Length: 132
Image (cartoon, rainbow, N blue to C red; front, side):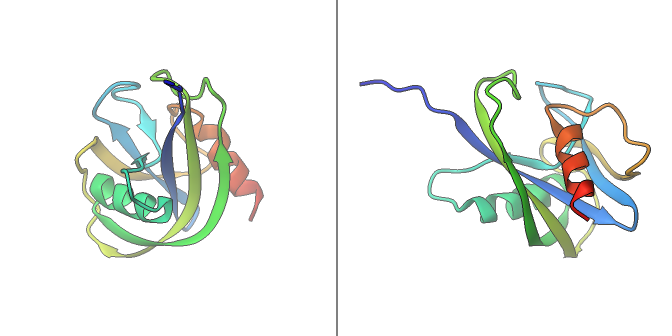
């Protein structure tokens, strides 16, 4: 039998003072718009490793997980198809801030002055801020 199954991603929320790290997407969907750093889980990879790898690949920063924020599974959250994301708050442990493989720009934004974000990332950030 051929079953349709959702794909799994991980998103990283990296805060510094009252700012959050965002990437400008280099590819569709939402090319040119800002988003949380993150991406797809590779086969055989733990989701906790995915978020650390993806944040490094897209921002140049080394991080470690502080805590889980939530799981977001709305079938319409990604125009490419049903995608479930697991979001974590991360702490910077090293590296150098620079755009990576899927990002054309990367920078910190004041959490009260965020640009228009892709996917459901505004909701994820708002839920994270409410948990402080």
